[in-house]
Length: 115
Length: 114
Image 1 (cartoon, helix red, strand yellow):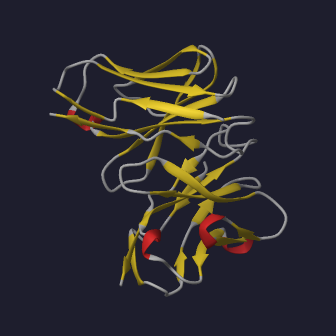
Image 2: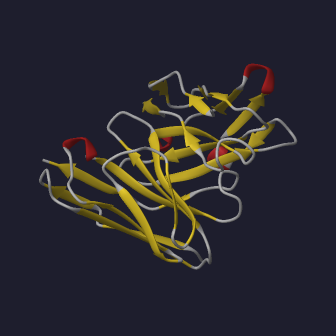
């Protein structure tokens, strides 16, 4: 069955510092991979998505993610964090042939940004 | 443009009372519809999804049920709420093949069962 693991429950970075949020997935076929962001008390917004092609994917708000098949990872990065990036980030995996055509989310990583 | 409406935003209910949360989508036809639950400190758990009117797939056996009486309406219900039903409930939609297209989320309902 498909699954997503986000090993870090929360991360604190200084404003202006670089960020990397980890995500590992388990999926029997070629996965569709997503990163979503959730502000407190709100729904989720898509940051970026990967299915095929270039393994480095650019998203909104200056985020990027790199797909590494050999490591079953899809880590999210940002070179310089802004205070407004403080939120919860969810990695997700979806697909068609296996897993029942649905999107499965990780437990999330809460990002704190200190001045 | 497409919009998703989810209400109420906040709900406090006693144990054993019924529940009805409603979600409607505007500006698209035949969307895939989803109910997720987010418990405090945990990720999103897929509860139900629907690819068409009257078609409901349940992911987790539990105290809840879902219905899709109209193309763009998705309802989450319970006959008797449990304390464990507390959480943040999110409705979402997508188009095309489920699981491979981006999800658009509503703003959520915070349910507290006391």
